[in-house]
Image (cartoon, rainbow, N blue to C red; front, side, top):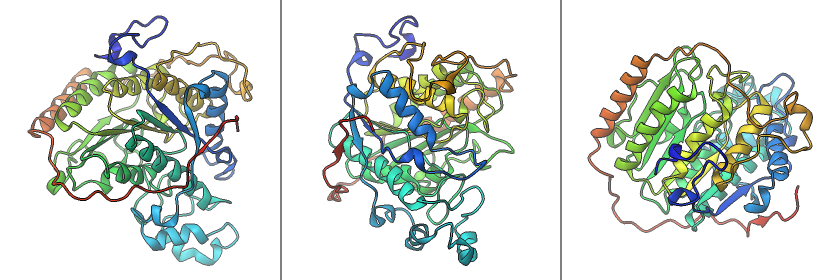
Length: 413
């Protein structure tokens, strides 16, 4: 059932049919995460995760989920994707010692966009541990796992990039692949999901689909013609977009493309990176999506009833990031939230309206109907070249990543 067919008034998820089903949802949160600080003037602010958590508490959503404190990822967990020497560097570098390691800083691309800050390594362990923990929960039968501190999609095997140090998404997908033959990755951040695409570019077990601004924009990759290589040919999809895309234009691509992907790829699990820098009014972004339009992607992927890992990502107008991820948590739970915001710890951030939703702007949509039609046609044509879901020869399953018993957070941290 297409969730967009649900009535707009009241609870926008139908009460009957596959979409009305309650989902078993777990949510990962570490109360320390909001204390990490990239430095003065840096647009990436982990404080937005704490703001999101406060809204979830005040809307009463924490009571409807299993709330878990993540176990920090260990060195060996991080090295399932990253190079040992890169992880050793992240573990040892500090703001005080970085001047003695100029060559290593250059080699690992740490410095400007990706600064060294106090607690950097424990920050990486926390957000990666939450994403891998979410994958473990899905592997053991939960329906949806949420980690708003994750989704750092630019990190590479041997280097930091675009505010990202450790690629928690790749690590979570590797965990999901222990139980699922095929995993789908979908990225609605305004920036191309380059680190994840690159990691799985030559395999047919992971399909990556990225919707992003393309053309003189970081990281510069994600051309519609980049489709994967070798066994992975046609398993990378790129949807390049221009400034000002609105809800209607975005969904005219998202729904038909994702419907076809689900039909031909038939993933056992889906990872959705919900970067909020694609929202209207983002400090670094140039799209014009409303929170409802952004959340429609979550609602649509949820409607397929496939285990779903929801991750954060970009998002630099932090009041809107918190609004968005709070609303999308509601979508995961099948709850339509009241627009009037309850009083919360960060209430002053949300003035002068104190509402959950913000109107998109009147900026020009540079994506013409003709261009959108051409992109959709091209991608659907590429998907038609995949005859059916690829098979994987049976092999002994590697053991799950074992964490000590996860800590259920019973009190509001």
